[in-house]
Length: 255
Image 1 (cartoon, rainbow, N blue to C red):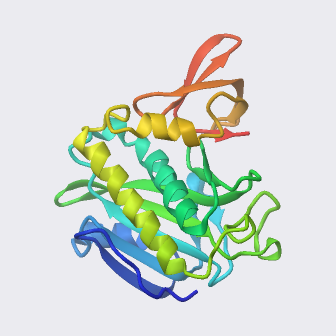
Image 2 (tube, helix red, strand yellow):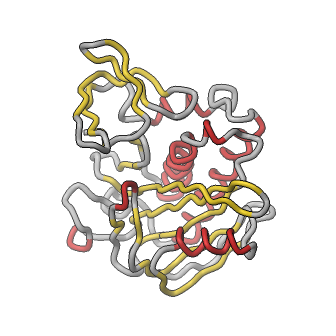
């Protein structure tokens, strides 16, 4: 996939590599070594061992998607509120990629972006990294751009092209995503992590396929929790109304 002109937010830097195991791992190591600063974007044309949440693999055919990681300094937001990072990144992805490709994308708690037919077109993995300058976060994003059904690992996966999007300029799609990510991060930091004050809470709710729905959340230990998705807590957790009352879920898969 050719990346022609990419417009970066002020102060951001872009590095493109042909192939690597994981952009998240590479950028995390660079941050620890002091060779990467916040605003560094690392994108790989082919990522051999991309990871999603819970150490799942992220698979895409070389040249069909955008797989990249961004180093973020969330301060002055306290670490207790960093659960909003994957939600914020998913919202920025839906807004930016959706606008650039001409497709209405939705977000599924906690880290998926879906096409109008409910297929997963993007996933996010946010990881904390401790550096000499303080805690930072590496936000990894995988977006299926031009993938065909035959190129995707599971029937529930999709791409911008499959959703009827315009995908002839991946550089423009990446530029739009980074611009929205920069804007959402800036507002969140300015509000010191207050998602409501930053405009995140309302925007996320409007784009969410999870909130208001009856869902089953499978927890990391395997327990299945059934309930109605009521709201997102200040720390990014999902609150369900169950038969036993409200229950707050900090990590899980929504079905």
